Length: 113
Image (cartoon, rainbow, N blue to C red; front, side):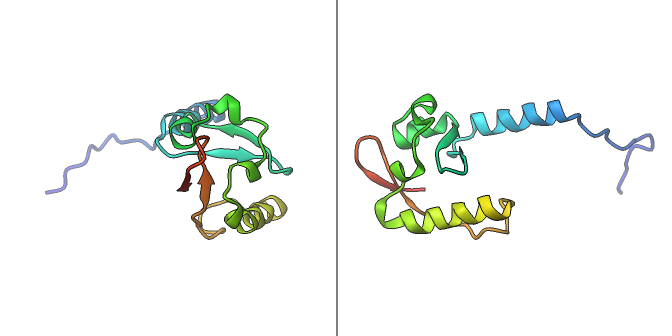
């Protein structure tokens, strides 16, 4: 038996400010590292998980070149993917193949991201 309430009304869409707050809360509390870089490949946002993963607090990463964080052997591939995203505006899931790259921790160790 599949009993559903008869008075179910469609959910009202959330306003843009609420969606922005929810997305920010998800990213800020995620254990995954999120970065936003500008067209010059400079970090303009890093979430708190970056400190555990890279050893840098988010405010320390701001303004750093992405090339300072990416392992030299993976730099060309990573910057090529970033360039494609910037040039085409395609950063949605499924449009850019996922890629793993090595990144440099503040202490000099290399890890995968």
